[in-house]
Image 1 (cartoon, rainbow, N blue to C red):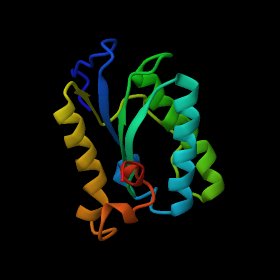
Image 2 (cartoon, one colour; image 1 turned 90 degrees about the horizontal axis):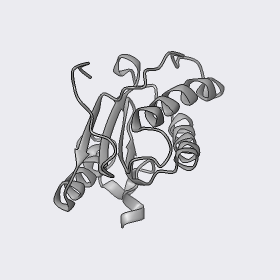
Image 3 (cartoon, rainbow, N blue to C red; image 1 turned 60 degrees about the vertical axis):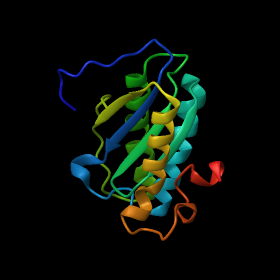
Image 4 (tube, rainbow, N blue to C red; image 1 turned 30 degrees about the horizontal axis):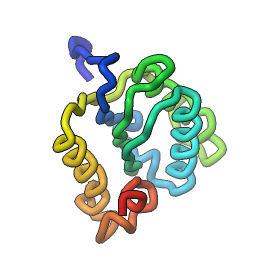
Length: 148
């Protein structure tokens, strides 16, 4: 993400956040690592008191639709995810880099209901578009089935 991008926090907006694995490597291609990432997301959600409106974990990236946290900033939340995951993922196998940045690859403020639905549809259709499954409900590492 460019360093000159300005993030808007504090207005209670939703945020569509994307971040990628180190050098876009498919470090999340293993189901155990995807499960672990969702466990970590739940820990971070509770710790920072935020709402996860949607998610999809792909082999080399993650999309999240989040509220602003009640504790800290969204950058702190993303940093916590990126810092917790490498340490715990080592148990799932080698190859996870230990360095992490607190900045997501993209952070898009979602101000309207129309944009919220657009972002949810985009993330939920991502596994289908990539050919990982035939329909969104088949991808276990997504919030689609909750909405279904």
